[in-house]
Length: 470
Image (cartoon, rainbow, N blue to C red; front, side, top):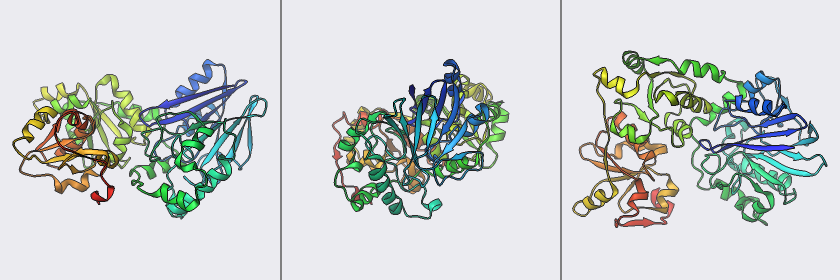
């Protein structure tokens, strides 16, 4: 028996490869499925099942394409309804795989079709649980993503999840290995561990949601308290996972269209088109096309694209190094952004050679900013997440989180310089690109973000109560 976790850091997502006696099950595959086919072929094995733990909201799964290419059966748990051929398994049903079995454990709560898969080894011993978004390490799945579809409140779903955890998962032996659907960085939970593989016994001791003697009322309150709104693109990904989608090969072909500066400008002038610059933020601040949005490939690219652009049907044209073009298109497609119309051939140098305008972003070091603050009070804005800001921030800083930046546009000065920070510099450049695209031109980026500011002697507030932001 072979079990491999195939982890994707950008999405903080775990897919799984299970093999026994030449037969393979893939759990929650990414959209680019050739990696799973190649792995099975290298081991002279055949993919038999594609097991989905639920209809994912944060990425487009590869189940449809993988089934088309391999003939493998797509399996969902109870309550799932698809618009493509699939097996809707029963709770407790056992799926034979070589010398082992995979037992379907229906665990509604995160969504009503949420299902875990319990691996039983050749001796029929409980080996591991592939827990999807029902149970993470350190957390459990948020209960607010399927409210409308299930016609339930998030409190209702949280109560259902409580029962699933207590009756279906916590009754399993402590030595069962937990393979979760996500780790730290995912928007599918609040406080996930950085670890991506653990044991159930440890979770019973350390996971707040599995606390002994916890009442359902306590569970519901703790799970729903402080839950940030889900990203706007989540429902659109769910729809694609239910209904199907275009082959990623077609998306790559369309998105790889090389556009001259003239062609690029013409497409950019079409209503609703977004110029997405995926170069490193340090390159963007030096020079970029006016009106373009910076979201660098070297950060949590796909989730931020989803949060900032939101509508997966938005037409996108790319500013990207040609050697990273396929990577950019693939990572956009992972979260359902398929309408990529091409890229600027020759990049920023080609744009400059065509005698077109370029813009830049002014930057200042944390030390120089601290020095300026000795003689004058400068308007400061912090675009980190709420938890980061509450933990520590500069005295006098305005809280304008990147996730909801457009709601705060009126707070930025129109006629004077202002200064902006995130944690290290990635998000602040995204924020400044959005502000510039909205006509707010006088923002200055603090290099190194709060990590650098914290080393200065500027006064800070720490462990602030959340109510002060309301």
